[in-house]
Image (cartoon, rainbow, N blue to C red; front, side):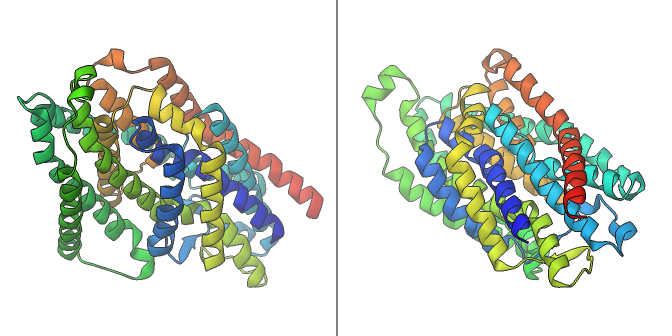
Length: 410
């Protein structure tokens, strides 16, 4: 139990340093918010997402990748395996974060679970057909996110930047883009986040609730946008400086939304193996496909995430926010809105996607709106290599740690 708590905290520290830094990178990189503000927003909205929509049940075996029936009479094997998976995923996330690589937390833990399954149960325990979906997500996620971000950026260019009076156009169209954000994030939460709370809404009702929330957010956005005045001095240095100022409050909305969506969708997943260990210990050795997620585990996960973002998150934030392409509030907003929309699309259609890959693709899409020369292809090449390495790295580390734990305690 003590080892599970320590490894679980370490793993969630890795989620904060990598995954949450991903979600915040566009806001910080576009200078809409500071790093300190990003940490504060993450602290509040990651917790809110985890508590309100993070669920009270988590799959013990992540996404049904591993079949534990082969060790039904050996619960200690599952405990060693979950400990190994937590530590292996945590180590890989630490390595990736220190290098500034935005990798998928889901794929890190899946790779680790596959490594444990092969080492501890046997290759037949792995549902290999599911791995094909993960490989497909390396292409689907960034392509979808990139395409939507590109289209959004082109729409902002057409309706706002390329008009006779960009500032007035931004004031007119700004609330509409904020409405889209509120509407889409509400749908993410209603479709994907609340199923564990037994809040089952029909599709029309979900759309109606999301519509109302979107209109409320748009009204608040409209009030904030009205207060922004044109700055002729700043416009002399950069033609669209006043327009970018209008997108700053919109970026704050999107940063809060991304943190909430991440908290509701990914926090419980990151601490699934910890819940599995607690479940096995408390039930006296019973292995279940699903296990209850006590409140203290959610608090532990939320704490680890905020500490991870505060201590190591700046490296991944730097990659997402500044190294792929130069971001401004308009570009950053397009990337975050596209990422949120892609998550909605994926959650309804069952497409295998990764939030990290979507966001990286969205940032690339925003860069491509200005031409291939606006993106750093070397940085993108490094990121793609880190994605490919994530599954085998997690698997090999987990297998080694599993044998080490089995040797020490078995």
